[in-house]
Length: 218
Image (cartoon, rainbow, N blue to C red):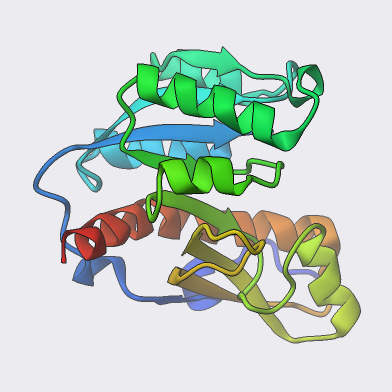
């Protein structure tokens, strides 16, 4: 099989709603970002803020893995980074209480889970009710939980994608804000499909944050 040298992502995806239909918030949003890994979605939000696509300020990054590369991206964007290693806490609630204290210290209004690989509890959800946003690599409600990309491939579906949603106590079940559909191509592996989904994650996360803020004002 001959593989294409490049893929035009605009021709291989469908985003709803369109970012052009979402007004930028009039008042700057004060964001706290939670991340566990490389931080590419963190950087997508930071870049959208810089280019004027999202009227916001990232107040703080909270990360839970000492080796997470996201801390390097935070330094690049001059964002304070706070390590809260989940291994140092006896349960999820204790971690969430510390997260709340940190977010409040930095005057955060909106919490963005950008690759945060921890299940949050009602302790955190209730402290920022309706203002916690997560991004998940599937078209919810399909393929909730871990290894969503692998789940889609194993199920034999032809289309998957990513979803930005509000966080609720049930994992990956909150109100859907924005989705991008990505076809599964015949030669896709979990790695190649994840890479293509991630391109769309970067595309939809900033406008979904703006949409959530607009909906919250109504």
